[in-house]
Length: 222
Image (tube, rainbow, N blue to C red; front, side):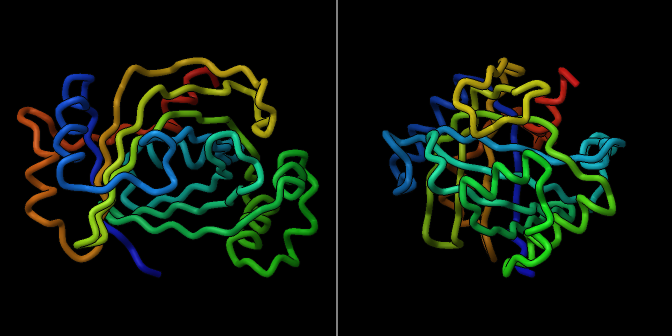
């Protein structure tokens, strides 16, 4: 399992304007972005005891979470993802889902998952059965992504974070979401090394590394 370095900073609007300008001069926009950004909708899973939420709140160094995600309202490309964290290292395992498969998971029709050819689908099935994982909440936000080839660096600016509250019908474009935070999240990910040019670009005075979680913020309504 390959892990990448991950660092997050909670920043303000003026910080974002400054970093965006710097990044535009040295990094490349993600080719999948539309006008430099895309809209992300995720459906996060948790159990009745809020295992994933409590691992984050309590600051556990080892934690994991499952989510289903698609971009820009395009439900023709959906992925199930398992995100694992060990301190400042992160790993993401992913598998494609059809729209029908995603909806069946939301509806609780999961027996087919046991025979999936994708290990992460089978793992989610097992944990839904044993740990009681269930779809918990929708998390919507806007992302501006930048890439830098050396070090396989990816820098993202996330904002306009919204919660589906108790709605889990995440394939429904009419599902009402509510803003939960004015925070802007700067996230930097890289493999073996972080190039100095990127380190300098994202450097801000009086900004410490943060532990802001979009999922945690979106659980404010329950």
